[in-house]
Amino acid sequence: MRRTLIRIGGLVAVVLAGVAWWRRHPRFGSGFVNRVVDPWLVRRGLVARSRGELGLLEHVGRRSGIVRASPVHPVPTEGGFRIVVPLGEQSHWARNVLAAGRCRLRIGEIVHDLREPKLLSPRDVDGVAPLVRRLEAWLGFRYLVLRGTAEAEEPAGEAAGTEPVDGKSVEPEPVVVG
Image 1: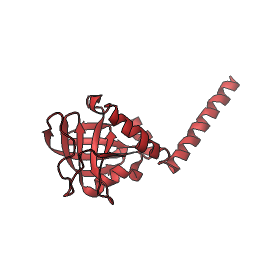
Image 2: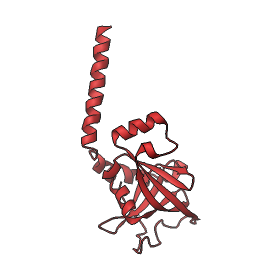
Image 3: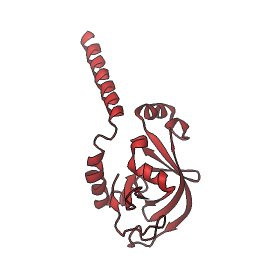
Image 4: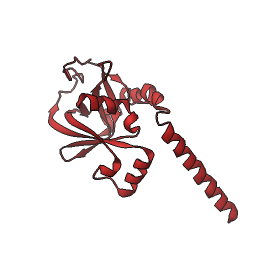
C-alpha cells in the first residue's frame, strides 16, 4: 500500500512539474507542428475528409502579408465559431486573425467569412464543461471566438484563397503554418 502511494505521489509530482514547465515554455514543439504535422494533415487530405472536425483557417500574416492556412478544430456556435488556441496569446495564427480583424474558415467545400475575433479565457466561453474550463485556463489555453458572415460554397476543384483578403492578393496554394 505504501509503495502504491509513493508511486502515485511520484507520478503526480512528475505531471505537475511537466505542466509547470510547459506553462513557462508553451511554444516548445510548435515549430515541429507548423513545419511537419500541419502540412502532413493537409497533404494527406485529413482536413478535407474530417467531416467538419477539422478546418483550414486562412489568415494574413501580420508582418509578411502572406496568406497562411492553419488546421484548426472549429466548433460551431450561435452566429459563428469558437476555436481552441492551446498557445493562448503566443499563438501566431491567432494574433494574425486578431490583427486583421477577419479570416476565412474552410470546412470541406464550404468557406465561412469570419469577423470580430476575440481571444477569450475558457472561463468566459459558453458551451465548455466546467472542469474542462478550469483545466484549460490553468494550462493557459484561450478560445478564439469569431462571428460568421454569409457562407459561400465553392465549386469542387477550385483552389482555396483565390479572392483578396484585406486588400492583399491571395496565393492559390496557401502556406501551411500553425
